[in-house]
Image 1 (tube, rainbow, N blue to C red):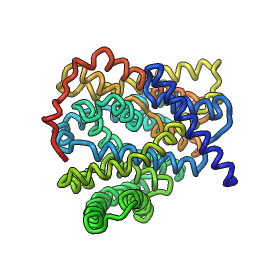
Image 2 (tube, one colour):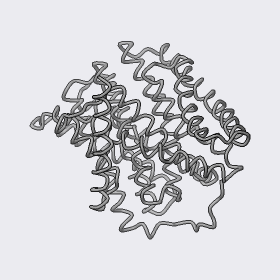
Image 3 (cartoon, rainbow, N blue to C red):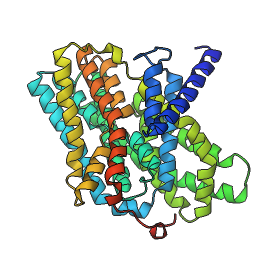
Amino acid sequence: METHVFFLHLLIILLSARLLAEVALTLGAPAVIGELTAGIILGPSLLGILEPNEVLRMLAEIGIILLLFEVGLETDVRKLAHAGNKSLLVAIGGFAVPFLLGFILAYQFFGLSLLVSLFIGGTLTATSIGITVRVLSDLMRHNEKEGQIVIGAAVVDDVLGVVLLALLYEFSIGGGINLINAGKVLMFITAFFVLAPIAAKLISILIHWVDRTHRRPGLIPTMIISLVLFFAWLAHVIGAPEILGGFAAGLALSRRFFLPFGIALSTSRAFSDRIDLKMRPIIQLFTPIFFVMVGLSMNLNEIDWSSPFIWQFSLVFFGIAVLGKFSGALLINEPWRMRFITGLAMVPRGEVGLIFAELGRTGGIFNNEVYAAIIIVIALTTLLPPFLIKWFYSHYGSALPTEPTGSRTDK
């Protein structure tokens, strides 16, 4: 792509995302719905003006990393630790149930192969916490009890998802299930998860020290972006599969390994506020690109809407995708409203589900009908939950516990 064409495409993405986000807010919907809709309109589903490319994917990945970094910086670590057991139940239940049910039904009921069934089950485990976090942030609930449970569950869900995706990737390029190669992949991923928090802690101390001694303009944004790039490099150097380099690094940094960084900053609330102030304009610039890219990645024209198989397949696995995430939330000891909103917040598949589906398609695992049906499931589980979450809070939000401002723990 020529430089001036890329600039034009980026201009279209930013302006359309902002315009449709304002329309969505005017209509009472979350801003993220407008941004997702912009991607669907601009992409192959409707106008076909834009299509995903590697440059836009990288910008979108930076957007979601920075959005979730901001959420991590604002997360009350003590509340998150307090919600640990509940988050663990939500994550494990929401991961295991859809994976097992999806695999069994695909293999036994639909008669698909073992590898195809594993990919389908893997796709159903995905959670795009970025979409949920954006909606909860817009509603000022991301730092409340249910928000902390969901963010904590996303920690475990992401770790399990990265491991599963690494294994499925190895199976797809290796032509089948190989336990020796699977063991190597697990070793690489384990090394990454061991090294990353150590690196995050050391770099966070360095950033704090440099900021105290050299208060130069642009220092904080430069160091934060450098931290993001370092994780991407680290994932590649330790030998993780190439497709997982930036993906695993982004998920790990934004949703799990912000905790060492956040803890390092906890001694200075003023420093945390400065980072938030410096990074917010950059985050607000990149984040809409991510949500537009989710919409661009959905090609609804590829679906044969007259195929009975697609509707039957989509309906069955949509039910599994939704109920599977609720199964984990039902395990926690909370009022039904808290369990309901927790399960609902874990439903969106978004970019994570699309990565599983695209890996299955490019690896020759999914045929056109299976891929189209999976895209329907991902689209429905991505677009519907934000509306339902907003509806739930408008009707039942006042019944949920809200901690007084004075009881919040200072970072």
